[in-house]
Amino acid sequence: MSENRSATFGLDGLSRQFPVLEGTIGPDVVDMRALSQKTGVFSFDPGLGSTATCTSAISYIDGDKGVLLHRGYPIEDLALNASFTETAYLLLYGELPTAAQYQAFRTDMNTHRLLNEQIRNFFNGFRRDAHPMAILCGTVGALSAFYHDGLDISEPKARDLSARRLIAKVPTIAAWAYKYSIGEPFIYPDEEMSFSENFLHMLFARPGNHYRVNPVLARAMDRILLLHADHEQNASTTTVRLVGSTGANPYACIAAGIAALWGPAHGGANEAALGMLETIGTRDGIPAFLNEVKNRNSGVRLMGFGHRVYKNFDPRAKILQATCHEVIEELGLKRDPLLDLAMELERVATEDDYFVSRRLYPNVDFYSGLILKALGIPKSMFTVLFAVARTVGWVSQWKEMIEEPSVRISRPRQLYIGAAERNFVPMSERR
Ligand code: CMC
Image (tube, rainbow, N blue to C red; front, side, top):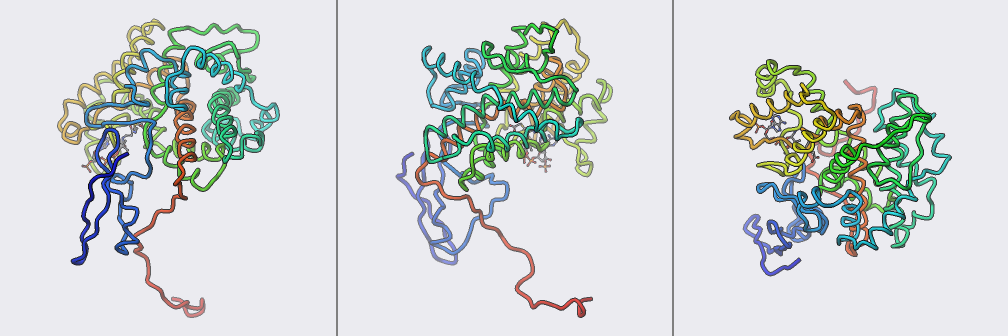
């Protein structure tokens, strides 16, 4: 990060200089930390659209060019050449692993997949029809009650241990949340399998019914996870950093990230996108649905479209579109009616002036739901899968934040628009 120029901010005839910070790539950032101290005013930026809240060396997005880099590597290269576990190593430690580093990391991570047996008891406390995100959020937060040796966040070894445990154990909790919801026995993790093979195994194997993991489907799952691993300072990552800035333990921070991801504008969008396709039903339903979307009073959005940062295309959506076709072919679903509908909807919307003028394009969630459905994963599990993947990004960003010497508790200010100070009125005198 370099700092050679300054920006001038003027107010009531007084001007003040603020340093301009230059990152490796991307727009310059004006360092406004001293704004209130120098001028007595605050900046107003709800949604944080113009505000950088941290420095980070993990991922980078160029929304206009449709570029996503992980530690400098384009997401397309990683999706084609690396595994999810390799990408996890890259995000956590900054470099691609050598063969020996990868083997050691993989072996260690696989041993962390198992949950303390007491954690099984948690599941019985939930209703069978509980949303798996509720189970995931609660159980991940509860991990801090079990793994005390990872809680001293001032210790680098403890931080690393917690980071690895979270990446390895969240899939087990996720798969067990699913098994619980369908009344099937929990399947214990298999240390010999890859991350994605083991995840599919825990979701679909049953005692007495040998489940063979299809390599094409495991690869598709791995790709979905890899594409969701990190994404700059999105809402859930910002939540993890904010909670982490208070010194909260990593399990609590990741549980908070899971809660933030749950919303339909963020991680819930793939579930909502598939639900939308099911509601539209057939190609004939597309015009009426798009008219509803364009009616500003309807509150209906085209789910799986639009992005706060990508304004031309989402590179992850392109990769998933191809993966979606691979999966449909492998499963012999040559003509999947929902896929046909999705492709037609994409074609019509990307030629429609409403979406073109607002620069709304399919995002990663437009296709991920279709792939997950083809893999036999129910809609209620879609956001859970996103959480399994994003745990890698969350823990990497949490570690980066804790290791930043100048980290301060996040404490935004506000523009107060409530009543000015007034006198208390006793109840007997109130009207
Ligand atoms: N359908 C219809 N209109 C839309 C949509 C949409 N999906 N997204 C944005 N718009 C319109 C919006 O109404 C506004 O129109 P106008 O200028 O007339 O007021 C304009 O486009 C700009 O929208 P915005 O709300 O300012 O955009 P934003 O950056 O705040 O919202 C978003 C980004 C992702 C929340 C939004 O595009 C959206 O709700 N999309 C659908 C949900 C979705 O697919 N979310 C997954 C995002 S990708 C996963 C991830 O990376 O986390």
